[in-house]
Length: 145
Ligand SMILES: CC(C)(COP(=O)(O)OP(=O)(O)OC[C@H]1O[C@@H](n2cnc3c(N)ncnc32)[C@H](O)[C@@H]1OP(=O)(O)O)[C@@H](O)C(=O)NCCC(=O)NCCS
Image (cartoon, rainbow, N blue to C red):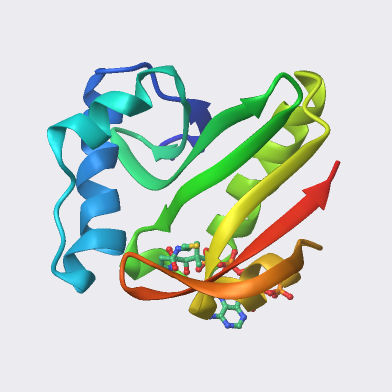
């Protein structure tokens, strides 16, 4: 059996570059949008947490430090053929454990309206008013670890 599990993808490694393709397919192409090179370069000091099966990145999320002990979780994407099978939840649960070990005490994110039930199922709470980002409705959600 080919091993599968979470791992931090090194910046500009084959897997990290592959994960941009996954993010494009899941998060940007449906909106008719592209990542700009400048936007991707800004991610150099973010944590790229992948769920890797053999040589394939099946799910991805990024963590951006906002304060020394708080992060913003962004770009959460599961391969379309694997959505709804628990993979997203496993990756987020692993990430939360990683955060605790690294003295991160809370996670915030901007949830797409369609993904709110997913985050609610993991005890994230909505705060504030809905807003528009990349042309679609979002709401800020937070979780204390
Ligand atoms: C949203 C996303 C990351 C969730 O990952 P996933 O692997 O499909 O979700 P899981 O199978 O781990 O679901 C975990 C829980 O959330 C629930 N859930 C997930 N998506 C849901 C939805 N759209 N509506 C209702 N519940 C949902 C599941 O029922 C499950 O609940 P349970 O643990 O009580 O059984 C994934 O579907 C995805 O990539 N979607 C497209 C991109 C996107 O919207 N990203 C988030 C941007 S903020």
